[in-house]
Amino acid sequence: MSAVFEKPSLTRRVAPMLVGFDGPLAFAVFLLACAGLLTMYSSGFDHGTRFADHGRNMLIAGVIMFVVAQVPPQRLMSFAVPLYTIGVALLVAVAIFGLTKKGARRWINVGIVIQPSEILKIAMPLMLAWWFQKREGQMRAADFLMAGVLLAIPVGLIVKQPDLGTAILVMVAGLSVIFFAGLSWKLILPPVAIGLLAAVLLVVFEGQLCAEGYRWPILHDYQQQRICTLLDPSKDPLGKGFHIIQGMIAIGSGGLFGKGFMQGTQTHLEFIPERTTDFIFAAFSEEFGLLGNLCLIAGFIFLVLRGLAIALEASTLFARLLAGAITMIFFTYAFVNMGMVSGILPVVGVPLPFISYGGTAMVTLGMGLGILMSISKAKRLVQS
Image 1 (cartoon, one colour):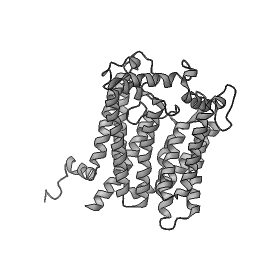
Image 2 (spheres, rainbow, N blue to C red; image 1 turned 180 degrees about the horizontal axis):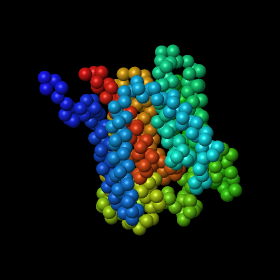
Image 3 (cartoon, rainbow, N blue to C red; image 1 turned 60 degrees about the horizontal axis):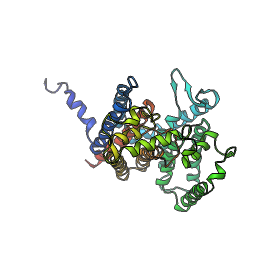
Image 4 (cartoon, rainbow, N blue to C red; image 1 turned 45 degrees about the vertical axis):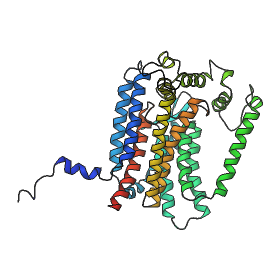
């Protein structure tokens, strides 16, 4: 009789939580996290406790990932509307009486100071995946139009703060859901063509459009300056163009094999601005070179491909759309950060996943990974 009432061991209680845990995804994240710790140790050598804080943030993100992975996708769907509603309400509150720092109103004090736009990185794909799940099998043009409205509201509020980097990530998350839900290519190609034409015209008429005193009507002055600086950073090498120029110098000076761990002169002589946050890819490139970059990019490619595979294998429309959107968030993080540091995209505040320092972004990444793990786990449990 005693055996019947014997308390199960800790191993037996934890084992069900690990059943179906996505090993390949976890392995890719582990390797990227190791690269992040190495780079932070070097680039943050004179930033006090930044390396230790980065490790702590990774542990917190890991715990969040593990907890979220235990929540079934159907349960996640029930959080979609409340989380989106709270997020948008907080964005409105920020616009009315938010805290202003360095000319941007992005934060609000609710007992603790938070940045509500971060909530929308997860709430937006959750909301739109829920929206299309409820209309599965009977989608009409009006459903896609309403999805666009649901996306435009928070994106517009975030752009107004202004916070272009977060707005891009939220917009990509939402557009990914709309695209994966079956948006017609006839509606996708025209804006893409207009965007490409605008980029060509911008390059051709850069002299006139970026002339001193000329103001673009739809952008803030600092946003216009970032685009013009991208086109020709040498116009102000010690001012607005300093970030891009020093980033490119660091990347180029790394050569094929890099200067070696802790040997980056641009990094350690403090020529690279924001070397532990937005421009940490430049520090990594200098010390590990082209081969190191290729390995890092391969890690992100594997992460994205694994996320898309989870999306393709998901058992419900909601899970497929959500997994696809979360995966595209990871892709956008990496692509935009590497692009802006390399001088092919304007400088915006987008960190490099698992590499850059930042507690809020790490929490968001942990939640995103947890959602992917949850969807993968649900699929494997169904198969078994």
